[in-house]
Image (tube, rainbow, N blue to C red; front, side):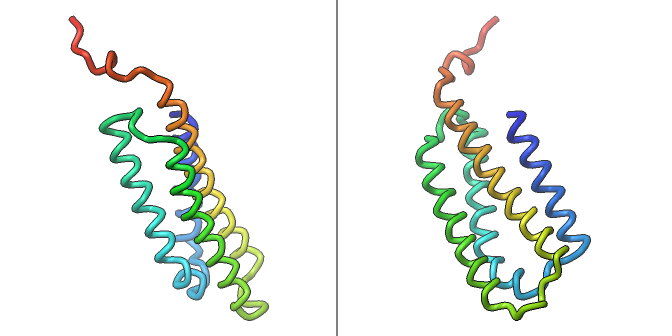
Length: 130
């Protein structure tokens, strides 16, 4: 849980940095759909985990989030190759890769959490005890 909290905080920090100094519009437009799909997938995963912490299968999450990140990274590479040289500053690239790293870090933390939560016997924790 602590790892998830740190990764969420890192993503919020990276997002705030990108908002303070927006990324170039070609990057934003090329990646907005993939980023939204990733965010919606995480929202769905967190919703499932909030109802049943042991419900998620780590292997399934790894495959699902891995495919999303691979598609995102492929689109990033394609977009970077299409952007004329000199369009991105060093600061733009640093903010962009910080944001991408935060997304990857949160995805890995979710997968790690699911792997650990699978080993916990959750039904006893739901029983009323007086």
